[in-house]
Image (cartoon, rainbow, N blue to C red; front, top):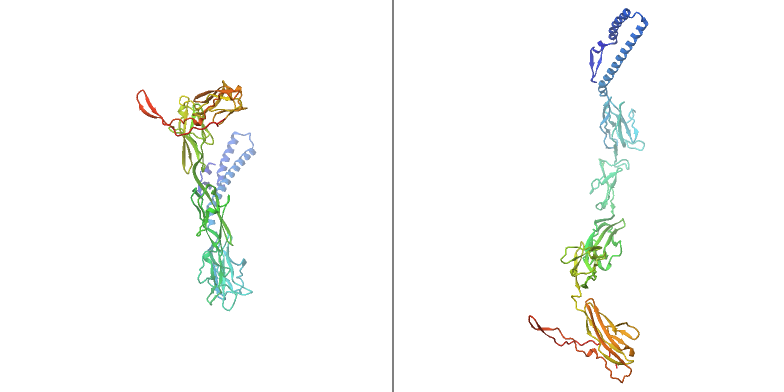
Length: 589
């Protein structure tokens, strides 16, 4: 075993070393060792039999053969891997290095379709025409297959029974694979004396039109115009020419109808109220399209629109927020119909539709300042007090001040420091505007009590007559007037009527109506009263006394003027007023 591992070895492309010692060497080196081992056992182990030694020896030899066979197998695999690229290089699948090309020849003239290939082993070449194999083995055939793969025609045939015109291709094969060439068309040129017996030589073209990517000649002479355009409209004729001669067809007129298309679409507009909105809509087409405008959300304001003569655009004058919406331009002709949409947004600056007014509110009273604004987009409203940086927004409270969702400012429990100007502001992306109102806070200390300008006077009237007791009061706030008789409150009803202005009328006087009548005028600033006695007599023969008509009273004095002012005194002078006193009761006889 030691001699096997130390024997010479070969290095392969696999990168491994394998033993090259022959089977004979293994046996020759092994047997002497077995003899020595056998003699050793004869000398020391006399009890073992000869058959036991033979079995042990065979087992050792079988193990050596397994090791040897495994090494030989690895050596064989490595050798195959080394030789495989060399074997593979000897074989190559066919490859076509020259493909046949389209060919146009005159009838009965020779022609050649080339087909050069390479491959190992050398490929065989077969030709096909219109999907059928071409017979080149017939000695009587006018077609011959050259050694280099070319298909040669002694003369081209174009008849009813046999035709060489068609689509050709070659196929190259060997036992490694095959290759198929590109298709080539062989066309036979026509002659003057034969109609419909071939296709044009060279190409077909017009005198004024060359072949382009859109214009092609197909099926041997038909003119195909793809994606027809207006510039294609006109007269066409076909000119066919070959080496024999030239022929021209009569003219054919092409009329191109074009469905409508937009040259300029309407665009979305955002304008201020009062401006002019213009939607452009320029279209093309043949026949010329008709233009129709409509509004998706309603009617177009016909009285304020016009159609532009140049591009059929829509103009809307003096726009208002109600003109907002989507406007559609439709164009149609006999070929088709198209439409485009654009929206109009009308912005209007904020304006106040409910304005706050100046207020005079007593101490601890409630002040309300409504403020409603309109605009497009709808404006936002907030309140401020002049001299304060606090912004008061709707649906929020700020101490005893509250702004409603509609924008009304409410001041509860008005105090003196609440007096001042309050500013309502309305703003939007378009503009902003403000309006202000003044709050005056009054108290009893600041406001004099009501004044009774004309009060009742003592009267003596007969039973059954009518008594009129005047009471006209003024003050701020407007005072409330009440009547009392001998301290008891009088209410309108039965024979008692408190007429507008505060005067008391008593119909059908009775003796019991005699008494002290008092007129009181009261407000938050105080109370003033005026009393007079009414006496009712049984007989009219008694001395009667009726109060004078208030219209005969002198008018109140005019505005006083200061004459002399010192540190401790002042002298005033009044002028007679030109106003006439207001009558409060009719003359009663």
